[in-house]
Length: 486
Image 1 (cartoon, rainbow, N blue to C red):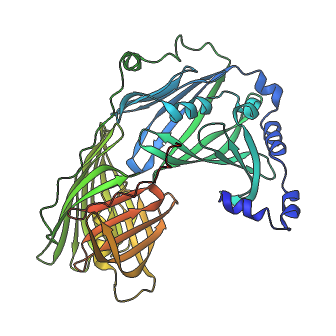
Image 2 (cartoon, helix red, strand yellow; image 1 turned 45 degrees about the vertical axis):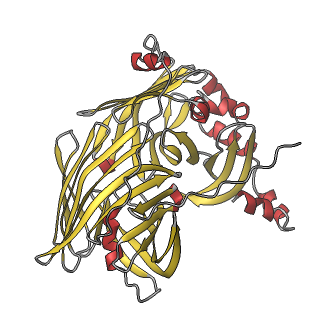
Image 3 (cartoon, helix red, strand yellow; image 1 turned 135 degrees about the vertical axis):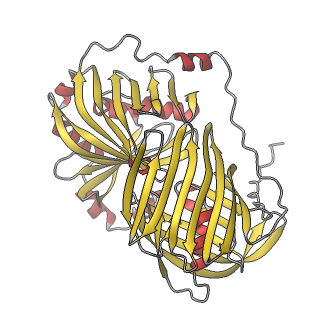
């Protein structure tokens, strides 16, 4: 996108278009005035926000408290009944987080730099000191608002893109890539329900989308310039202990070498950013007019462990789902779902440690049932149903268990040679595109053999690849290094 933008500068029509765009300074100044003005922000030295947190896809809800103080101190506490506390914070020098999924950890490198920058209190007052370059890059419609788009580039770390409403001047959306323990993740934050807290107008609802998940924060009350709890920004004891000893990186053990090519079973190794992060084992059985797909998946993404001990789908011989079940844990958070299908409904019974709940979704009778964020082997059903005799677009409904149904467009790209470590195999290439239930675009590539067995799978936008046992990933060629000067 950057190259395209620079190329367009050569075009003689660009000066006319550029002249119609306000400068980044004009946009930021309008936002500052729309939210209360410099004088109102300068009176603020700390604040405490109280509200709620919700992760709809997992049925998780909890309370939230955010403590902030100048210049860049903060502490966020989310308390989820039956799960415990999720905390993160910064004292202005170190940044940390502690939650049931990953345990305590200290942020380092680019992640630390970005966390300290994101913790800046009263950012509109000092934004030009925080970012080395701020520029208007265009205008577009987002979240139903006609917006100006500006890019804020720091001296180190990743740039941030912000969208400001042309009329009101308010910030509507932010997109950015952030370094995390799970690698680089693109995050999208949507701001809504602007209300006044004293003299300052601020959003009371934010929706954050990342890695196929969406959660919401709703602020009910804001206190300004209060007596904060003593040592609220100090690192908790668990973090203090980590500061006393060196960090040990988590290790992931690759899948064992292949021994089977049975079309009725499989083992996948999933890579993220070139590193093995997950293994899956599954079986496909056809018996008594039913098709049963059953298996498990286990991942270690940085220090976070996710175990899907079982994900099972039962369909009739026409691939119409009859039932599905998922059982596992994300860290210490249970993920248990039992679903039955009938009369155009998916009826879910969910238990994530907070007590059982129910959820009902509208679905098509022949919907394809998958799970989020993994395992990937349930996409075997899509591979079994795709017509490999035509390259015309094919439409399939896809139900993400306990989230919702979306439409997928599938195109058979033809047979092509695919390289693996030590061999090249001709496979059938299938591409599926659509959106997640949260509205994020998604594209998946599958390569299957003539038995419709998944041999390779890829999600390019997430840097994810998966390989069937016996078809090892071919490592990318190393970039040649220049000869040392003699």
